Each structure stands twice: as structure tokens, then as C-alpha cells.
Amino acid sequence: MLEITTENFDKEVKHRQGPVIVDFWAPWCGPCKALGPVFEKMSSDYTGKLAFAKLNVDDNAALAQQNDVMGIPCLIVYNRGVEVDRFVGAFPEPSLRKKIDATLAKVA
Image (cartoon, rainbow, N blue to C red):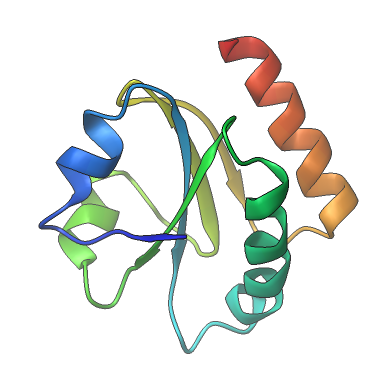
């Protein structure tokens, strides 16, 4: 699981060749806490297909603003540095898996 910051956002997201999903979250956010274990568990299921990353919006507020994150948790899927999908809110694993699979089918 990648930890995204202002310092590594360009390298790990904007210049990444394959797709990456970034979880914009905050430690005080209840839905973020609920989504965290699901997101982490799923990261191993998509090895080689989709990179998983987390970005703390409290520590990286400028990046959240630049990416138009208005509510958290906010999962943004980037492919070759371009946003291709966005999911706002906490989802149970089956729903999140369905959304991710549909997005990956579009970028494959």
C-alpha cells in the first residue's frame, strides 16, 4: 500500500504507467475508518492490475483541493495520471469490487 504525499504524488500517481486507486481519507473520519480494512484487504487481490494508495487529506490538503475532493472517503482511480473514475463514500467490499472491476474494464 502506497502512502501518497505532496512529495511523491507526481511520481506515484501522475507518472505511473498503470492504474492506481487513491483513497483520500482522514483519521477523524468514521466512514474512512470503516473503509480502511476493506481497501487494504482488496489491495492484495488486485496485485499487478491496480496499485492501491492512501492520501491523508489533513496532511496533504492542497492535493485534496487540486483533485476536487469535496467529501471523504473519496477513491479516485487514475490511469497514466488521468482520473478515470471516482467513488465517494464507504462501500461494502462486494460493491467496491464491482465498481473497481467496471473501471478496470474501461481502461484495459
